[in-house]
Length: 100
Image (cartoon, rainbow, N blue to C red; front, side, top):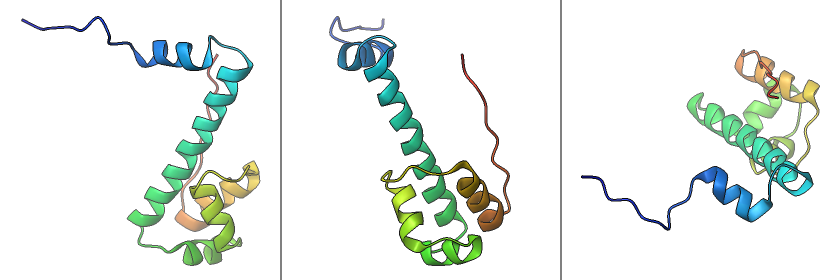
C-alpha cells in the first residue's frame, strides 16, 4: 500500500505558489528557466565532445567568455549566434518549437 503525504505538492503547484499563475512573474521565471536549460545543454554537449570553452569558441567564431556566459546563464543570446555555435561548433542543427 502506498503512503501519501498531505504536504506533497506537484511542481506546477509549487510554481503557482512561488510565482503565481500564468502572468508576468511566472512568465519571467519560465523564460529564465529555458535560458538555463540551453546553457546546461551547451555545457553537456561541449563536455561530451571533449571541447574546452576556448576550443568551442574558436570553432564557431566567438569568445571563450561568451561561451562561459551562455553556460552560466548570464547572457541573452542572439538566435543567429546560438545556431552558429551548435552548427559550426558541434555539427548539429537547432530545432525550435512553439508551445501554446
